[in-house]
Length: 332
Image 1 (cartoon, rainbow, N blue to C red):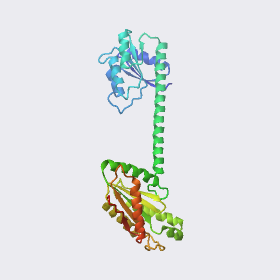
Image 2 (image 1 turned 30 degrees about the horizontal axis):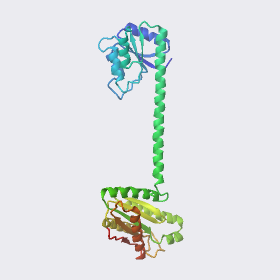
Image 3 (image 1 turned 90 degrees about the vertical axis):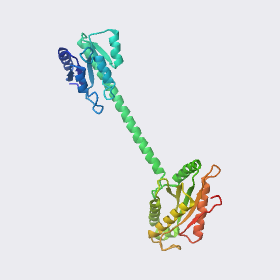
């Protein structure tokens, strides 16, 4: 028994009986019959694109009352969920116009009602073999598309991971360097201000030396989390710049707005109450912050923004740490 299903459509019940007997003798035991195109449409759920009938081949008579075989073929082949089902026209007419109309409608082959059993079976086998090959090809294409999708997803994940700091989980220096270039170019186009906060954990070397490197790593993670949680806008980026130093890039933000956020970061870190008995600035972990703000132009480079923030950070350290200092430029 061959596991395929054939739909035979003919208004002659006697011919359907004959057709079914021939097919059964060849092992095609799963057959459905329809005595009109309209009945075939119901079996195929012609207008329900969500239903995919388990029909592997259609044998369609040309001359039938109501919708004839050629029109029926045309309607079936116009439906996305049915167009891949091979269809063989059965006809008593062999005029070229009839055959051309059948092939134009989407039929893949034809047999006459006087065709011998051997020829009929050969045509059926050929049609089913072509369908099997097409189904296998489509399955391979789907598999390749799924593989490509998974590969793209994996590559995207790898890229995302390459932009993350392995210890703290926030953006790394590479991500910051890429992001500041992008935002700088956008600010030049839009004529908007961009600001930068540079933050450094006060006396972190003393923390590491006395509490140990594992505790130091934990401290970096906690400070990074506090910085990240202080940000409110999706466009703002916090990144580990190196060692115990962090940067916060603030697109479309002026100096006053950046200073307010920097002070919020400073107070949040202090209020977290992480003990640091070896700090000269406080008995808990604190950060010093430098803030700079620039109106980008084609004549300026983003390195100027970083340099200015670094200078402001240096001044914050000089003035006793655990404070915010802003770089004041005559150019704004």
